[in-house]
Amino acid sequence: MQIIKPDINLDFVGKRRLAVVFSAVLILIGMVSLIVKGGPNYGIDFAGGSLVQVKFAEKTSAKDIKAALKDLDLRGLTVQQFGDEANEFLLRAQESNSELEGLGQAVSGALDAAYGPGQAEIRRVEMVGPQVGKDLRKKGLLAILYAMIGILIYVTWRFEFRFAVGAILALVHDVLITLGVFSLSGKEIDLPIIAAFLAIIGYSLNDTIIVYDRIRENQGKYAKQGLDFLINRSINETLSRTLLTSGTTLLVVLALFIFGGGVIHNFAFALLIGVLIGTFSSIFVASPLLIFWENYRVRAKAKAKA
Image (cartoon, rainbow, N blue to C red; front, top):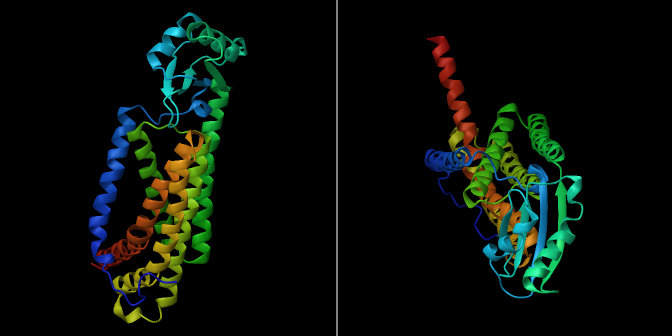
């Protein structure tokens, strides 16, 4: 099935500088947000602390919930609406020690006293120590780093080192933009989001490899017409496949985002942004980077001769 004719000739390579400016602006905005906020907004998995998910029979407000729990003296208590329902909330506190093993019962008792018996249902209680959270954060970052190193080795072996550099920079581009969007939107980074980042890396790499494979196939056919034409022709020939794959994936991810509920909302959001940015980078970042690499190499040789 093809939605775009294989002989289409859109000038993607000619727009590469505009694409670089667009990507640079997105990354810069995200980095500024991270700096201003002092880093990512880590979830309980990484930051440590206690979390209680509560569902109320009637609508209430965060202010009223805090007032009901004031006697528990929970340090750093925050109350956040959870999911699409106005009567479900997440309660977060900095404490996570053994003294809070009965936190669920204590919160339930305080809410029953304020709202009446059976009006508040404790749906989830989680506790993570600060040292455990730090260890999980480190392992999550290492997982992404090891994935990048493995991809660098694989693409170098399968193609050439310059292709591997282009693929890695495109993947870093995708992760940084997704991370920046999370910072701007105030969403938390936890273990499921690290899994989403790894899924984004795999998805984006798959699209990039398809384009790289077509570039390699076309090297003999279009060698005399220059690298710009070769890369642009290869992107156009794989464009139908790229859009079909991205479109069907987006439909699934969008369904998860809309109907999946609060538990996987952030995970689906990360995939949604990642698929969009990954498709963009496969077309406008990974392959055109080969041209910047080649132009740099030519200038360096000319400078050396001079």
